[in-house]
Length: 401
Image (cartoon, rainbow, N blue to C red; front, side):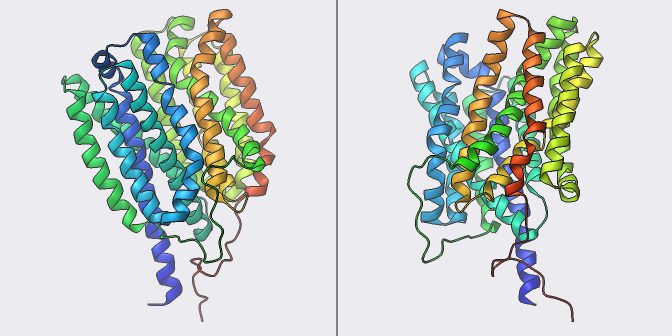
């Protein structure tokens, strides 16, 4: 077998392996989200206390993500991802066994910290595989995450419907997902630092390039968080939609995002990251306009569908651009991830506070304005747009005789 052909096959196999890791990561999130009411009752916390506790995953992720680069440097990319994904899947058990507010906050802090570090590690490997294949795959990887989240949510919904104890449900889910994640890691790229490569600092602030890229991700995740948490409420309160139709709007938004991410790589390969994100921002703005001006639930549902379509590929492309924007991909990706996690944390509450002060329609005017930022500042991604990989170990097929 020719060395070049073997390397190409190895990288293709690594692509599917890291895709499986993304799906496992998403499945943990979906499994947790569906059992939050059970966890609230078990811990004996009020709605306000639960809201406080649910801030701790983002806090834990923000604190831990800058550490991911040093972990990967010390143990190698494959071993680091294997360990971090196992810690993340096993952390699923912690919230359901927490008996009080304090222990729930601590459990969710660990849950978020392991989520963030494994997120950085798998995105860094995804960008590396993309570079070696010289075609866009990161959007599809995030589509696999969405598919995993939907699968985990479906299983959690069944468990909740059957009245299954969340401690048993999450213990079984953690076991299955840990085995799946660790097994998939056997085929991801085994990247090792060069002999003369200086180790990154154990904890470092993100570079400036990551902050600029993260600003676009902030706008996209803000729109995503607002739409996920408030779309059903918007249809019910603003447009008098039935509970079933309102719930279907949220499901449709999630499905639109998943489909767009899976299909988005072909668009990125044809038009490039900057043009794709600029067009995506325009679509998101049109969706926001439909939501704000809607006089009928169907019109608003179409607006949320366009919003999902418009923001779907933005965050994956921000991660990809960050991974190619400097000498330390993990550090740059950690910076972007920290900004996007923060956006996801503040978006739902910001929308609620603004709606209380004015109206929910005005809140989605803000979402629409932020979507304009996606289109207006898409050029920031140009510096990290994909380019040919020239490193000697890249998987480039040998020329035909």
